[in-house]
Length: 535
Image (cartoon, rainbow, N blue to C red; front, top):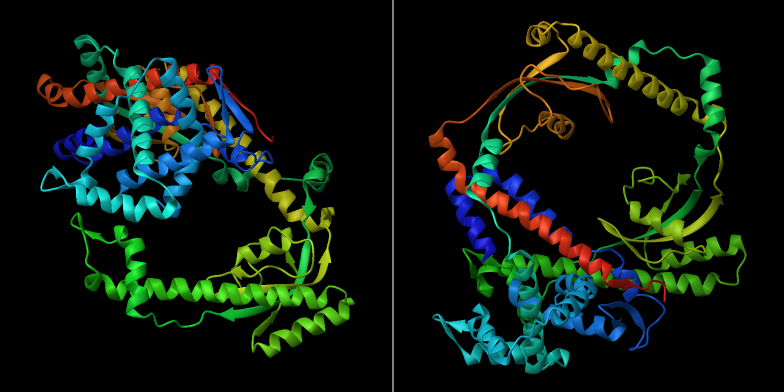
């Protein structure tokens, strides 16, 4: 319902509203999300009754999380028309499980009860179970047989999934049902959103002052000594890489059709599922790449296991020889690397950061099979240098660059402060002073409904609420320098324009008040919730 309402607003008022409304919607729902779930689900407390938290005086166990994951998978499957067993559906459901458990405890605390009739009505109206606008039992049975039964789930699991979903929806409705907005609030908010604002901004970047910076050798040495601990030379490695090229796979139609059944929800055009023959070519390419990748990974991992077993009790020289011989027997290409650092993104011309990550994490000398863009890699560590403190000579240029940037940053900020003093001494001639200052640039007139897309706009917009025409901000420090904002003009829209924009303003204001309500609701949830980590 919400999405349909938003879409209708977009159709009437265009894409320019997208950014603002999207931000408001994201903010309103972020309050429902909380970190820490993955740690609970993967902790050492693995028994079904292990307690991972509590809400409103009731414990939440590992089994509760498993139940909520399953039920969310069923609901997400219906909402997004994807298989219940889909990896993305499972991942989203598992991430949602702890919050779902909390919200259901909260719903029970609020006395929310979903009847069997409500569950039945929802299922009867579910689009996946309808044909020609009516509930179709054959579609319902097909979902049970093809989606639930293979996972050892039943119609009762569907019922309880819907019941939980409706209970959470009812809880969210309670959060916002008492929001009241007066006509005066809408009018004032509408004027604020749609008044035209004209600014001039001096945005002073540190990079523009770098040439003015002079640094002595003594300053460089002192800066290095003060910050010496942060200059580290990371671990370095040398290695051999055995490369497995992806094998070409020609899929059989029978296999392709089976694969199509698992991914057909991806192939939609004009809102309709595309038949097998229409997407066969694209499907064949996708399936071939998938199978080739899986086969090559298995082959690479088998090779890695053999290398590990055969080199386990050998000397260093023998291990290298064994790796080379085994790779030759498989007719594999071998890449011998030069030194590469643990924080590197490429090994020479080989841009495969996953391989570097594998070397950083292994405890032995043989890596797992690592998928890359053009093949599968199994690495053999031939040499290693530990991390160490850097000498001044090794990082002198880095030290010089950092100190230059710091001094340039201070120059930019001092210049911004000087500009503010100049404006304060202009005896009310701010606009004229700004016009004649080449450091200032005019910002085209805009409204808060469609703010300017310019560098550092977040810093600039934070100042506009505080400024009247002919007013100016203090020097505002940014990550790249400093800026000064001057308000040139505020123009109110005419009554006709205000009337045209009033509906949108009302919608956004309601969304903002909903955000506030959700924030209060989230605070209430957190106050009544405990999470136990690392159990």
